[in-house]
Image (cartoon, rainbow, N blue to C red):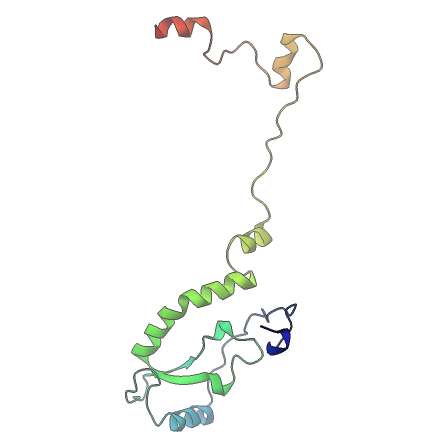
Length: 156
């Protein structure tokens, strides 16, 4: 596929800005959407009842650039049951967008808390050849790891 067929260049980064707080529909906007949909749910085509209407974003709000996510053309009215089912279905897409933006996942935890794994700083072998001084440096040569001759004799 040629570069000129794409609406943007290959080096263009996606708009990863987090959408702001969700703005509710005004009474006028609600009336416009209600009349546009002829009083029907856009998912199940059932009649919308007063007090049981939720405005949904289609596609999900998290997938759109922050500048246009609350445009009226992307909002649709749905009944509560359909809206709940749609929200559950959209959770994977929403979580992926949050991971991409760096709000969730390991990258976000590292940015917030910093690296958690700290080096133990292994003790260095002392310069002296005297084994008595090794204990002060963390090397205890008097303690056996259990691989001496006594253990082998017991195993027989």
